[in-house]
Image (cartoon, rainbow, N blue to C red; front, side, top):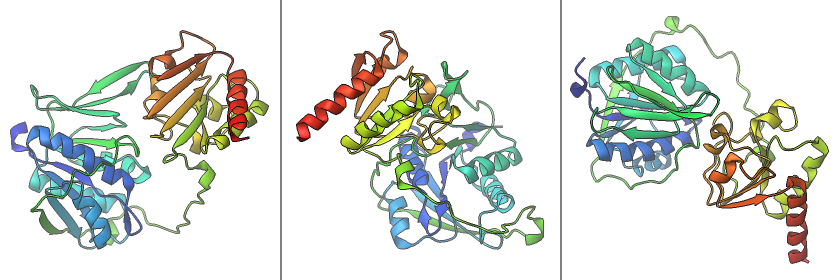
Length: 334
């Protein structure tokens, strides 16, 4: 395989109803930066047309080309038809890399077309780096339970395929290009070849109290929490700060807080203005999911790994520190 024959990077545009999924916009912004380094074009691939307002969002990310796929078999998301379309398109246009949001559908869909193209597929990278010497993309992600950061490459095969979790990268539009090429492709997929079908659909109930992805203030509690009853003081602190509570995986494993509040690589990626972590060791799997303007850590162990990530560190009993913060905030409000 001649890697030099493969050019341009693609982002799969996932939809949530008539809206573009946020992760697709985040990927377009991040891959725009990679394309600026490599000199390649950024191409967005969408199944079906997009409402004008949603199309504008994609164009503002600085794409060079938009491929719109039409034909039979795409009325609803389907693994078989979508994977086939990407296989056909990839063989025709030969992109160097394809990026898919690490959603429930994306994680199922990307490996399917990757294996049909006889190439590799990485998942959950926290950073993407272009290696000028090899011409490969380095997918950097935590490994061995978060103890190390692994660098994964696809050195021989193309395209390089990767899924990226929502919230990993920031949505920071670079601005639309003056000339954006639009390509229409018709790829039919027979209904009888679909191995699964939608029987029914019920949207998830979304409790706003469990939505912390876009919260400005997150008070995060770790395995240092000894008693479930102590959790109330942290809820109180979060409320006084106008924020919400989050947790690390051990608290979810212990059944103290739901999965939706788990912060980290295997949970929710957050970008708050203020993050306060209580009783958290600082494993990479957790800290990799936090991109805060101000990072505060509270731990009784002065050698805790989390202090290496903190702007401000407090060594002390987490419950006592929390109570002190509550008292100071209530006194200020009084």
